[in-house]
Image (cartoon, rainbow, N blue to C red; front, top):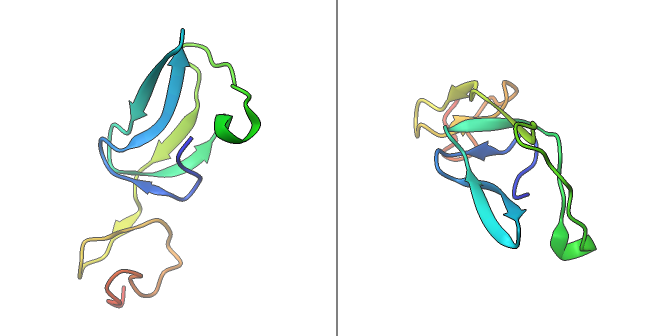
Length: 91
């Protein structure tokens, strides 16, 4: 798992990997979005444990990005920003 709630992902960005019969498959983001929640997570490099998943099971929930900066077009993950963290433009 490469993300956590609140992260902003771009279309085609790698979200996580699934291992099936010793073959690894990358799961990519279908859209530019904000990560609303991560339902299942595992860090195989740290604890050497895999988490089983079934076909069709929800692993990550993505949502629309609430707004973008008018100055640099950077996506904003929350409504609490008064200034863009990238360019400093007042929102």
